[in-house]
Image (cartoon, rainbow, N blue to C red; front, side, top):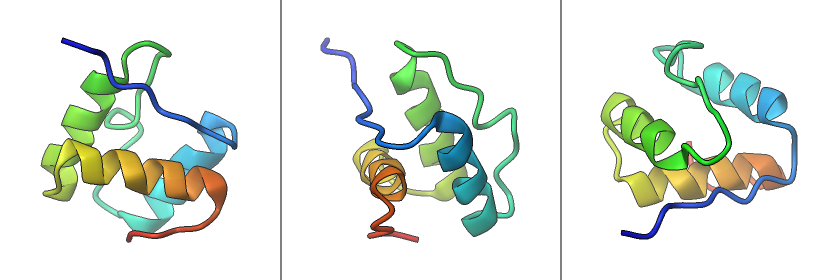
Length: 71
């Protein structure tokens, strides 16, 4: 199984804060992220946000680009 790779154009700390601003129920623990562990992060957030992993991935990448395509 191929691992998911996030493409970030901002620091994870910036992205993390933007996610928390838009999703009050998301905690620092939910956003715990180590490079190479993208699948675990996306799975946690998909459950919390009631979205698919792919939707969460696009959401995170859009925040990183500062396009905010999803909320």
